[in-house]
Every structure is written in C-alpha cells, then in structure tokens.
Length: 525
Ligand SMILES: Cc1ncc(COP(=O)(O)OP(=O)(O)O)c(N)n1
Ligand SMILES: Cc1nc(C(=O)O)sc1CCOP(=O)(O)O
Ligand SMILES: [Mg+2]
Image 1 (cartoon, rainbow, N blue to C red):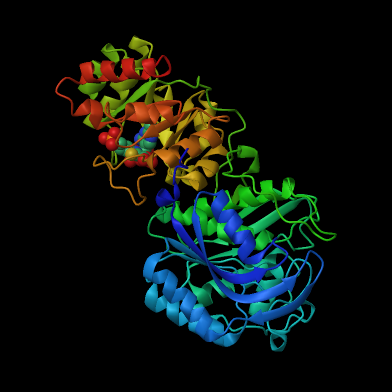
Image 2: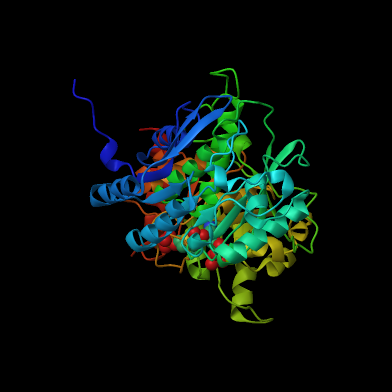
C-alpha cells in the first residue's frame, strides 16, 4: 500500500549547527526533535565534530564555500518558517551567517543557541576561542553581528557568563547578565538555569520577552521565571540543542514565542525524565512527542510582581465541565430573550466606564436579578465591583485584570470567576488562580473585538484543551458558529462562548437553541 506523504503539511525548519557523530546533540538532535514535533527539518552543517558520549576529540569547520552553498541551495527550494542556529565554528562563519540571514530570510524567526561547551565538557569552538567559564572573562565568539536580527537567544549560565564576561553566582547576577544581553541584542532572551549550581530542586530559566506584536501588550518587554522540577539524571546530552530546535519547531507551527518556549521546556522535561544511557557517558534525551501534560509545564512567576492584592485563599465557585453554549451579549433585552430560551450560563459584556445611576449600571443590576429569576448563572464582564455589590453569580475578567483586581474580594463574595487566555502562556498564568473556568481565545477571526494575537486555530485549541482541561473547565471563544461547531467540538474543549452567532442572527433565541442542541448532540454522533 502506498505510504501517505504527510510532509507537505509540515512547516520547514532549518538547523544551522554542527554534526555530532555521537548522535545525541547538534544537527542529529535537532533533526530528531523537528521530526518528532511535526516539522520538516533541513540542515546546514557548520562543523563536523568527532564526539561520543564522553569526549569531543576533533572539530572541523566546513569551508566558507560549503556553508554558503548549503544556505543558498536550501533557500532556492526549501524556504524555512523558522531557523535554529547552534554551533558556529569561528568568527568568519558567524559574521557571514549574520549578514546572510539578515539579507536572505527577512522576517523569518531565528532562535540562536550560543553553543560553546558540550554537556560532556568539551569546548566546541575553535581552539583560539577558549575561555574557561571559571575565569568569567569575556572571550569566544563575538555574537554582536546578530544584534537586532534574532528572535530569541538561549544561553545557559556558562554561555551567558562568557557572553557578558562576568562570573555569575546567583539568580540576581543571572538576571543582571540577561538584561545586559537583552539591551545589546534586542529580541527575547531565555537565560537557562539548568547549569546553575545554586538552583536546587527547581530548574529556573529567565525569559525576557521582546516587543512581540502578537502577544498581549501586558507581557511585552516583561521578564518571567519559568520553573520546572529538576530532573535527576545524568542523561542530558543535547538538552540545549533539543530545547532550541523545539522552540523553532513550535514557532514554525505558528505558536507565539512564550508558548513555544513553554512547550519546548516541557518537551525537554519529558525527554530528560525518560532519557537513558547509550554510550558510557551522558545519554541523549528521549523523544516523547508533543507535550500534553500539565504536570510537565513550567510554573511562571513575573520577574517584578506588581500584585498589591492578596491571592484568594477561599476558592472561586466551582462549575461542572460542560457549560454548554455560553452566550456573551451587550444588550439587556437580548440577555432576557436568551435566558427565556434557556441560556445558562450567560454573560453581560458592557465595555467602558459605568457611572453611578447610569443606564449601564441599571442594566447590570437587572441582568443579575434576571439571572436569579431564571435560576441561571449570569456573569458580568469587567465590572467586578457592581457584580459583587449586586450579588452576581460570577465575573469574567481578562489577563490585564489578574494583577489589577482584588480577586480575593470576588472569592470572599462566594462568586465564580472566569478568566480569558490567549495561548498557553496566558492560560498557565490564569490557572495559577484556579478560576471557575478558563476561556481559550480567539479560535477563529472575529470582528467583535480587536485582538493583538492571531487566531489560535483548531490544532492549538485541541492542544490547549488537552493540557488544561484536566485542571479547569475550558470555554472556546472567537468566531464560533454553527458551521464550525462540529470541528470545535472535536478538539475536546468543554464548552463554547459565542457573540455574533447569536446576537446577529435574525432570531437570536432560535439560533441559540440550535447551537445548544448541536453542542449537546456532539458526543452522540
Ligand atoms: C467567555 C469569555 N471569554 C473571553 C472574554 C474576553 O474577556 P476579556 O479578555 O476581558 O476582554 P473583554 O471581553 O473585556 O473585551 C469574555 N468576555 N468572555
Ligand atoms: C469578547 C471576546 N473575547 C475574545 C477572546 O479571545 O478573549 S474573542 C471575543 C469576541 C467573540 O465574538 P464572536 O463570537 O462574535 O467572534
Ligand atoms: Mg475584560
């Protein structure tokens, strides 16, 4: 039987790196990772290394002609969606690569892993580039030609120390050095803590995000610690290569950088957990496929927590997983019509300031009363003070409210809390508050609201639903309507929220009932 060729659908990712004859790191680890994560990997070899699991015995750079030939040949036919750069053998290679990428692949995301030391201890750059981490002197390659040209640079502590020319002995020093690099390079920085001896049970990486247009303005130019449990294994050969190629793979698949970093960290975490020896030294990471377990995800802590309120000690009202079809409306008459049609839950979403005695305030008060009358769960969007003072069932808030609103007041009032998220990074930030439900948006293009992020699509929705649905009821929102409901249902998300599919229908109550019936039938088919 003919084998189905699924390569066409796979994003192309280039790895520009060194060959590891031992198979655990470099080009070999990158190609295994890219294949495992559903990408088509192409390689540009910068150097051939003779190494096994215990030693690097020789490093030979490819000629400048060969380096250029690989790049030009690939560009002519296999244009990449993302590029990962690993080992660069010498300064002329680096200078050439920085120029060539800038001129030939404008706009293609580049993930730079400034490889200097193999996990078996060997220095991988040419002999004149030596600088033991222990001295803290700056030496090795000058990476400055890459400034302004890369999306993310991923040094470990030893590499950061050499890039900055300072010894790094604690998290404060790591943070300082990462900031220096950030100022110099632009883009984003992931300063990895896996080789920090002062970090004990946790492996903590510092992520400094650049001005990324497709993430929330809240998270642009902000820093976050990402911590996973430290995996007690010596089998970590190629972990840095695996991490950076996994980030490139996820970016190529359309995930925003913070989500790509979190997924790649989870991939490395699982790879380390299941790693085993191949030679007599550190073995390679296992290839464990798409990470889908919440337990593998890092916990996220803002670098400079600005929260002035207590985190809720009392939990928010718990809800069942299936909230069915959840209409979100701006008009009180529409809300009443839909309550009469059986909507439960339902949300009143009035944007903008609401003054005392205003018509909008009266609408909120009436919505809450109607909810009681119909025994339905009415959520109030944004206006949490009014929701509390008039005894709403729940409040729906956005990511920007997580820091600004005293969430403990909502919990103390015995109310439910729904939180928005746009991608994995925001979902994990919201999950730390254990909300009553988590909205995953926006799935398809929407005209109801201006969004900085791109639509997530069904594949990402399925992944997010798998990761977080074990912990919290999930609600998909954004562009959902009768035509795409079956595909949305197939992702495994618990519920759907809709605006236009109901409010712009000629008969909103009928449209709501049709959606609700279709949703109820989804598992019966
Ligand atoms: C169910 C549901 N999901 C998402 C939103 C969006 O909330 P938020 O991010 O706070 O944006 P605004 O709605 O306030 O513009 C929602 N309201 N409901
Ligand atoms: C209010 C809202 N929040 C979103 C989010 O992604 O957080 S998308 C959205 C609008 C959804 O409207 P429609 O169903 O008309 O596309
Ligand atoms: Mg809001």
